[in-house]
Image (tube, one colour):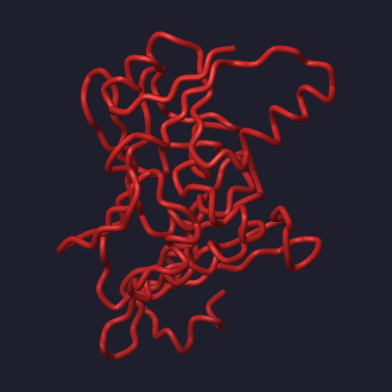
Length: 242
């Protein structure tokens, strides 16, 4: 097994395109999986591409029409960030992902790339209508989050591509929340979860609704029919519409 730790994005892309590697960021999913395989007698391990030395991939930047979160931004970074109510649901998820050790090491992009149906960040990103910034040999592109997870632990990433950032568009008058059902309150994998973003006008009428559920199918899903049923109605009466 080889261990790569490049110091530039171009070098990382070249390594990934020429080798069968596991990309390592926080390692909160990679290490347990590798340990479990070894415990069951599986000696096969892919090479490791450690991207933690790549510059510019950590941090949160607010722009005029979006917020950009670098791929190495951690759950703790998100939980502590001073962000508008649009991000309240995702920040709530950040405080419920594992223990503090996991929150301090685990990355927002890693949770997405792992593509687990129980990934707490994925329905939040769907409700936020996020776009995923991806870099590869052909350059940089963005992928709508709804198209990123293509199946159970499968993504739209090409063999040479690395996620570099998560981009969330701003939405006036929006707030969000996140609810998670587990066997217990703390340190638990989701049995089911829902993330919701609702925007209202000054009169309290819903102008946009985005609702996504996770851990209920191979990939998280937006509830388009429910979103349409809520839009245009007073927020105060929303509970009676469903």
